[in-house]
Image (cartoon, rainbow, N blue to C red):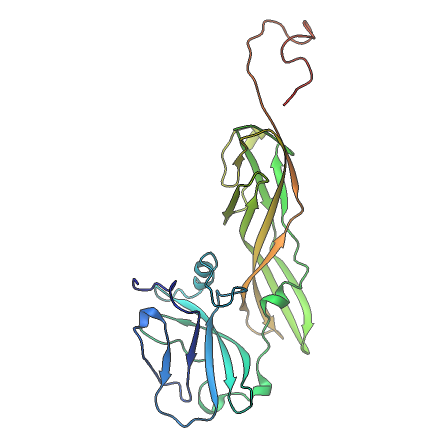
Length: 290
């Protein structure tokens, strides 16, 4: 494994801390585990999980990790982690999200969220907005636009793009006021002919409604016919509790747009000497066919 590579490592790590002092038990670049120096056991431990793991057990999603870990840019190889308090004084042991995140860098363990006697009681655990709660919000789906509208030519680039907006929601959660911001960060296209594409940009219009102009989100249909194009937009979320600082939601909300019809036709070139007024039955003057 190369320096700073994480793909083969479990996403869940455990750190036993009482005073904030810790030492690595494995090579730092592997981010495997950290043990506390010998300290009295009070039954409280802290576990951290990689923030980019969402809805997939302990499997890391390679499409999400780079975007979420980009928050940790103090040095190369940063990883964002979320902290969980594990209380072994009750049976079964309880796990309470602390609502705190920190960055882990090669060569050092992540900074613990709570140190020494300042640790809050379990009942004072901060509020955490999970991906599940994020997905309950009425995030507006992106609008699919094709150029020209609903029409394209066989083997030519048909330009389609999305219009998606950043959105903000305010709601009550566990006796607190939450402000949640959602912003589109990725677009998963399904063109209706079995072809799929994920882009980090929504695309956009081209000048003049011209045919066969390639864009980051355009598509070439190999056959004529009607195709239902679908789009799933991934939104990242950040939330504030009672006016506090914004912190990230672990994971991304997937919002599906209404299907968009693409009608694909073929073209045929011919040389003519008369226009359709002069010769209404001439080539190209009859109703078009596919």
